[in-house]
Length: 255
Image (tube, rainbow, N blue to C red; front, side, top):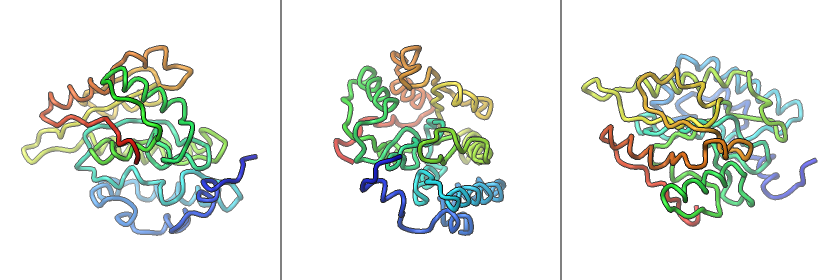
């Protein structure tokens, strides 16, 4: 049983519409207008999966992240994305996930071990010291799409919403990224970061897109190729090759 604390209460009683209400709202009220246009073909599937999640909640399950955060990755404009970091599904601990892959609520202590390993590699790669918080919003604001393949999870049950429809939505999102073009018809700058086998599975959806691949930063696999992979400097080099600006990977000391 989970201990009840302020963060748990926040997840239990989120402000704003619940999952059932999300399933009925216009798509462009949930995500940025260009994402709404790009995902219009899978809108029925999105509404279906949101209805499934609402049913899970109605059955007494706590679902994470909160409804206000579940589609957060799509609030930054599609046109601004220049880096895609693919995750699996949200952290299953109440109070942790905020709708961005690998990120957690700013108040979470200690940090999840995968995120701690990401910070360790960031310091080894670029000399940027680890932060005590796990809010990666500053990356998202620079066009880093932190996308989980599955966007919800039952509390305490990792992987519990796999195969329920989210994969179709996120597949469409990745395909939309790969299709973007500039006015002259050239592809817009994009680098994919694929950590682990699940993330690697999206590579066929990204023809011609340069990718930085390695083992997953999980403690179970980080020592088998994630540590020493220098993903952050490699991403910036690939962005420069495409005429795009570097991502400033250093996070603010406090979110």
